[in-house]
Image (cartoon, rainbow, N blue to C red):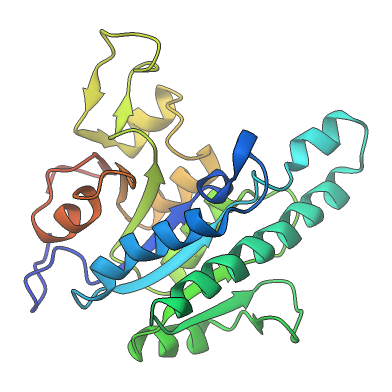
Length: 245
């Protein structure tokens, strides 16, 4: 892995957050305090000189699968989920700007009064100007998850790594909350991840990263040391890639 001029392992990151990271009581809705907490954690690495882009899910507001299971048209349910991701993106933008971090929201579904339309070159320019960019609206197409949107946007902005933020410190062979003997992986190849059906990201997202040799780092965002350490020295979470760096 190339070390950048400022001594960081990664200069440009795409951070994938779940909608639940913003959830209030019972795992639903948007808690402004949670948004502020996330913004503070990201600000720490932003101030190191890292270019930060974010994709956030919508599970705290809407899950397309729930509507689909109830007989809703799949595309309609997915579009509702995409709109919900823009709500989450706006909540995060507000949290960032309240702590002095310039932020832009770009949406794959046009809604010009609340967000910029997604334009790749403009997004890259924002990053070069040291603004955090939050991508809302998924890919803009039904049948694709926000994991896939994160992989796609990471490639488009030429990110060095896709960081999947979770509530556990990496990828395990089974649920560590249920099984005390669960084994944590420090490194996995893309093929191992797919073959073992490990719930790192969905298979479309992992395959996209594999084809374009984009590493995926899974870490616990709620560990205050994890994200800065991952960018400075590594050895945090689980790295999914072609080979060990």
